[in-house]
Image 1 (tube, rainbow, N blue to C red):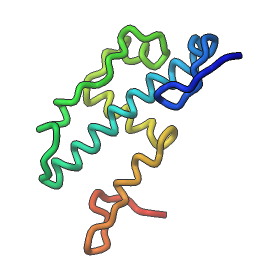
Image 2 (image 1 turned 180 degrees about the horizontal axis):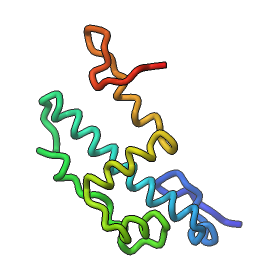
Image 3 (image 1 turned 180 degrees about the vertical axis):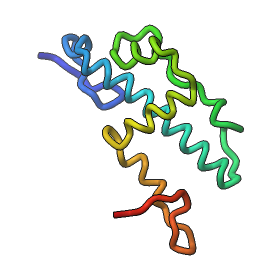
Length: 120
């Protein structure tokens, strides 16, 4: 079977492109990339650094309305707002991309975590 690797580093083959798991993974990756951009923007705003955006609400979430994944169907059915989508992806991250949350364990000069939490 002939295949290539797409921009997300996932196998790109005709029969795989129709697989529900593959479609969910693509949409979830887009949502995670959006969250990552929101997080980086919020951290810059928190530190009073210049950035591309003045608010996290300036960052458009991915448009998944036309996609065929169960994840996009869920988003479309419930018509989730910006904040609700942010909370949903934040709830999913410990299970699918926990490394993105490591930034919250960053220590400041007095040895305390800036954003709370306990490192086990």
